[in-house]
Image 1: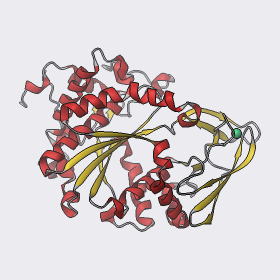
Image 2: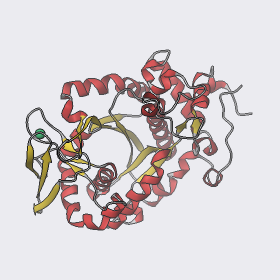
Image 3: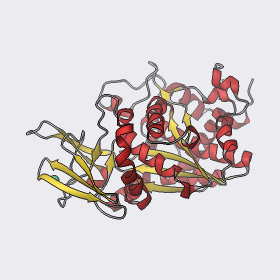
Image 4: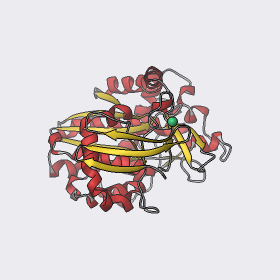
Length: 373
Ligand SMILES: [Zn+2]
């Protein structure tokens, strides 16, 4: 047994000599002075191995791009604390409501969660590869003036993009949590949420709380309510904000799991519908997915809720990386060995891996010393 997988050729793999060349056309088209690999993760409980894999691939790819192009390359970890913490149904309207981590949990607890679940691995990866990183929560991101201005400027043009953002309804969801102290619930599908641009710098959002009835909130570039957006809508605003000329020489690369591929096509269409050219779209890197025996994405929630079984050959740590039998340095080392294998050959990167194969590669002894047959 070797740690190296056997991977079939594909059109993309066949077109590349090196995995990082998938980004070369973007880097050569507009040579950046800096590259930032952006990797976002929902903060909702313990990370699973697919999350660790995408995060370590962001660091490993950053190191490769830095070496190859001689450009300063960093990682930005976007901690999505707007992930749902609680959900309920309003008995009167029948509408679904949610309370996000950012509203349900105090800031100190949230910081503690990120410090405990992500920082140790990031610190280890960063030190091993010499790649600096930053952490930004969604709470910080949405509060930023540039993000809010980008959204306010987008509003008059949203009509052009709304069917890309919500192809079935044409209504991309926006959530502004109820401002009553200790509440923070918001209508999940925004059925009764209305946005109105009162002037170019102010939007008024009207919504209905299941406990406190109708409320209004203003959003301005520097103040106002918490602005939560449905996933595609949020990514549109985030990526529009990153293409602003003020960022000039920085190329942002969105690092995602392979399951994002199809959804990203909609975001790309939405970005172009509001005026971006192809060349202005952010670069994207889709990483290998960890899948079960059926070929479906390894899903912690499906297994936890009893809808799927733990796949053959999968270990507990794959669903909850805190169960890894070793310390965080060893975990980071094994992940880096795994990413080195995946990045060593385009055929090993542009594919999915079963949980059993990940388990085999992550626990193989001295994987770095074994050569490809
Ligand atoms: Zn309320």
